[in-house]
Amino acid sequence: MEEYQKILLQNKAWAQDTHEYDEEYFTRLAATQTPQLLWIGCSDSRVSTGRVTDTMPGEMFVHRNIANLVVEDDINVLSVVQYAVEVLKVRHIIVCGHYGCGGVKASMSDGKSGQIAQWLSNIEDVYERHRDELDALSEARRVNRLVELNTIVQVKKLAKLDIIRRAWAADAHYPTLHGWIFDLGTGLLDEILYMAPD
Ligand code: CO
Image 1 (tube, helix red, strand yellow):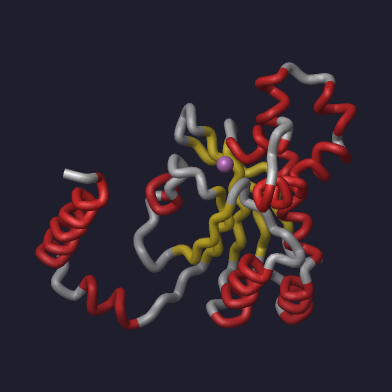
Image 2 (tube, rainbow, N blue to C red; image 1 turned 90 degrees about the horizontal axis):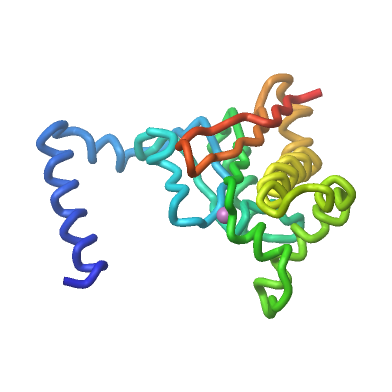
């Protein structure tokens, strides 16, 4: 059996089990979504948002791209942030990087081309700004430090967006912005940056 066929079967079993456990589950799920959080994470298949946060469908609005970037002229991430803030009124926005990120690693190597090269140039800018610190590190540590710095920069870019500035002008407490790092080796999330309306 092909992998995709297995997934369709797993879905049937899950839907059946879930309905047996709670008959109203899908009725409630279909009615509305009221997530409190927006998650901006990496597309990496190992960082499964719902699984690592042990959240249920409906709890988190999710955007994922290579290396969890907030690019100021990317209409995709901007519309997700706008919808999350203005319509869903999420209270917390999490940018989650992860150690061993292939996108971050690739940004440090040669031979990139096309859209990937263009996308990862955003991380090269982060490297340039922290070149002295990063060049002094061992290779393994350098990737993970760049993962941390990249996550911090993305949260700070979020804080400068008009969407967030407007929301902060209207509400003294929310949304709060968070930089988290997921450690694939331990399964743990760590908060490295917190920003709230000033
Ligand atoms: Co990654």
